[in-house]
Each structure stands twice: as C-alpha cells, then as structure tokens.
Image (cartoon, rainbow, N blue to C red; front, top):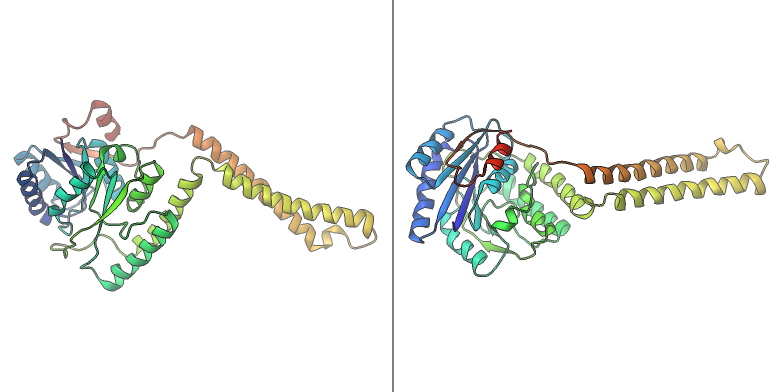
Length: 329
C-alpha cells in the first residue's frame, strides 16, 4: 500500500463525506493504493454514522471509535499503530487541509528520501488575535527550545515514512511535537513544505487559547524528556550534588569558625548560615534521591494504555490480532 491517510476528528459530521470524496478523487487520479483511517475521538454527533456509511461504500475506508474524548495525540497514536501504508499522511477533518497537497508530500518522502515533511500554513485564514499571533510565538519558542527549524509545528498536514510513526509514541498533548519526537528517535531528515490553508467551512474550532498554555508546558516536558528522559540522574543527581556541596561548605565554615576562630561567639542556631546549610543539604539529598528513583522508573516502566476503543471498521487488513487486543483493552 502506498499511502495511509489518518484523520483524527471530533464532531465533524458535516465535512466528512466531502473530505472523503476529495481524497478519493486525488488518490484515483494519481493511481495510489491507499487507505483512509478515520479516528473518531469520542464524537457526540453523527460522525461515526457517516464513517460507517463511507466504510460500506468504500473498502479503503477504515475507522476507530473511542469510547470518549481522549485527545488528538491518542487518536494519532491509534492511527499510527493501525496504518500499513509506506507513507503515512495526517490531516485534519475540518477541510482546512487540502488533499491536493498529498502527491507532492508523497514524492518528497519516497523520492527525496525525507523521514518527515511538515506542512507550513504560511497564509492562514484564522483569527489574528486568537490563533495567528499566539501561533507565531508558540512556534518561535518551539524552534528555539527543540532545535527543529520548522515554521509551523502545529500544522495537521504532515507526511511520514512508515518507520517513523512505528518508532515513536504520541501521548498526552504531544501531537504538536511529533517532529521533535522523530528527531529524538534518530530521524534527522525533517523538511517543510508550504501548504494551502483554507477557511473552515463547517462548524467551529475545537481548540481554545488553553491549547497554547498546554503547548508551552508540553514543550518543557519534551525538552526535559529528550535530554534527560533516559538518564534522569544526570540532571537531578548533578543538582543534588551541587546543593549538597553548598550546604556542606556552609556547615564546614561554621564548624571551623566555632571551634577555632570564634568559640565564644553566637550559637550556631542563631546564625543564618546554619539554616542555609541545613536546607541546602536536605534539598540536595532529595534531588539526588529523585534522580535515583527516576532511574529505577525508567528501567522498570511498562507501556500504559491511554485510550479505549469501542468500535472498529475495516481494520482486519491492517491490524494483527495482537494489535487489536491492545486497542480493545
């Protein structure tokens, strides 16, 4: 199979058929072997009914339905596990991503040998205050922190080699940082393509300003995990040793001063240096223990189930029994 198209969605019943027909037209005109996987992230409208109808009409359509809203990251994770195409394309279900971009994205992966191509919505049709300006600040911070030179981390339209999506785990709210996760996994050929952005045709956005706050917090998490996720002792242990040495230095100074320099002076407990020394050594010990416990957790942690599927459509061709058991709890 050439292409797997993964479309996470939440309450997008009005746009699904139009998006499906548009994608199918592009796939047929380019003679691609393809599959379209709709991941229904707990919609409470008729989205799943539309997906079921599409799956009956087109055997290339599959679907996964979550029991409740688990988030876009979990939806993408489920789609990545189910996909079997050589190239994986992700796009949003709101018709703001243009399927006409898919052939060129496919070519960049297969012929130019990129591991990942991220879309760049250079010209946006979103609100200047609630989306454009916060998005620019967010992308600037992400570039500076991660070292990945992309203009638009949050663009839903991306293309991946199959090996990339099978090697990373997307959870929490980390879908914004898939390029960073890919880089951390050793996939260094990451590119960017300017893509056409279209105004939303139906409904309204499911994301508010809180996504940028969550995004910055996730950025800190990604930075920490990418640098110290496999060796937490290198951070907490080093900080603990430094704090302990500072405290021990103050304690040594106070001891020498009391024993040899000014034995008749104030009591040690009356001097502020005593409390600085005590607090520094306690904090240093706690940081060191945190690093030690982190090392134990890294070596013993098991994969957690982060979502629960209630229904699946047309996935027998893409999911082995072991994968199906994993999704179904």
